[in-house]
Image 1: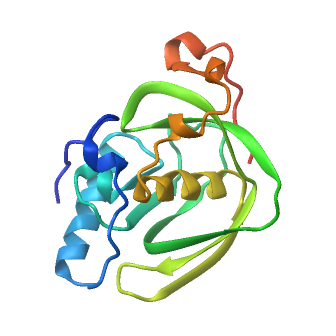
Image 2: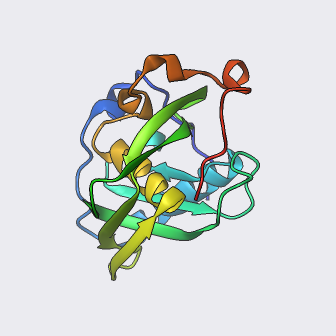
Length: 176
């Protein structure tokens, strides 16, 4: 429906915990359509409602062929409303992340390798998936937005955080 401006790190809404969605209606469908248009226009792998100025617990993600992530196994298009994440084991792996709200920067972020996510789709039908690798990373990154967390807050060593062009030779593709 519309490509919306993406809030950047420092905006107060990005530091707030988003409110649960209570109605699966036309307004939610319009929000998701705007999120989809915005994500695709900016070649993102996902986007959360707070990034376009809406403090609701909604994320979308997908990865087909994407110039920002050329070595990653595809992730199916998903609308995830009111998500709950459950790590499956303690194993974590580090991977380079970027964010539409932190343009031009990347950081090495530890994330759980495997997890279960539950929630609802756009129509309110339950979703329950067990995922790993990049799919798990994308879900964790997007759900962090709903809790007021941006990826730089997860970077364990700030020597592994900086501008994409300066880090280009140091970043290795993420395994899937």
